[in-house]
Length: 440
Image (cartoon, rainbow, N blue to C red; front, side, top):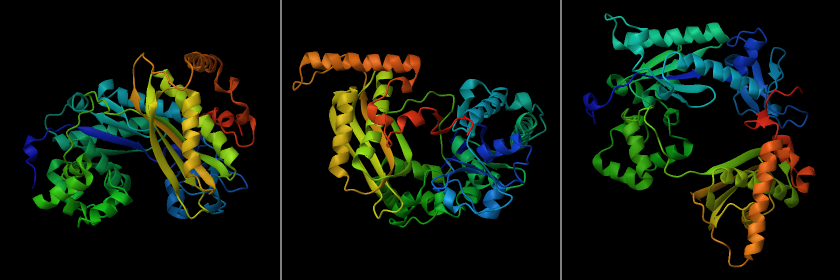
């Protein structure tokens, strides 16, 4: 062993996931069994085949091989398959019900909503309150409380949840992803005592939290071919890992040994804040004017966000993803700029960055992010523009923000958004990028 686990803090952490959340909610609402029904929640499902599966029930995945990234044109035609549109507002309501159940078990500071279908609960302070037996082991108490939560959620919502239990958030997450989702009880526990048995034996490195296919290839290039290899690196190779990946490399090494000293209730402050927006287009965008219309809309929307937080950006990043029919994957570029929150300037920078790098390929994905944010009341005026013009632009942005805040975004849009390539008006009614529940 590389670590003395007796010196590590031991918490009672649950990571709870609603099984196939969107699909399960739709099944329950239709009086169907969420684990025995073949159902998919599909974004725009039309005759163009451009829709995307947002969620598939466990049975649809098992019987038809459907995943959460399957395109509409690839979904098998099966008489028992139910296809439904998304209702994001309804899913949010169900999520709130479930998290209120969690709040009956833990204090707010011990609850972290990880995503719309996953939450982390640190039950250390409440475990003995709900399972007060002096004869049960810590592991048995954890299991009983996890089962109590499962049953309460099922009784009140009809949904099934899986629970990963661990001595820290990392172990709970690994237990959830690698065991509890696949066993009969839908509960699994990883502790410091079974790190070698449970974690080092994870077959695929990409099944480990924080390791994707690209990181896996990078690790293999320095002779790390398994989680066991990563956890037992000799000192020279550990230095090589640190040189290649920096802090992230050392984090992976600690995680492979089950070490995670984070505590949910302790406040966390990110070192760098950024604001961005991205979207997958509903069709391939071929013409430059149409692509630039989307970029202008998104540059405007993200500029509004940073102004709302009294921030200016010193770095813009743009991602342009190509259509699947193209040989290229697109490009991702960024550039440093003078601090600004001006919609006009930021739009010009984004369009300029796009024009310098786009070579005519069909576009299907656009993303814009503003980074290196500065928060202050002072503004550095551009020496190449008159102070009066800049003052007018500042006032114009603020007026536009106030009108949209009071009456809605669509009450004041650029004329280009009314063209065929415009997306902002249609997307204004979406929740999380998908239909909120509007009929049709």
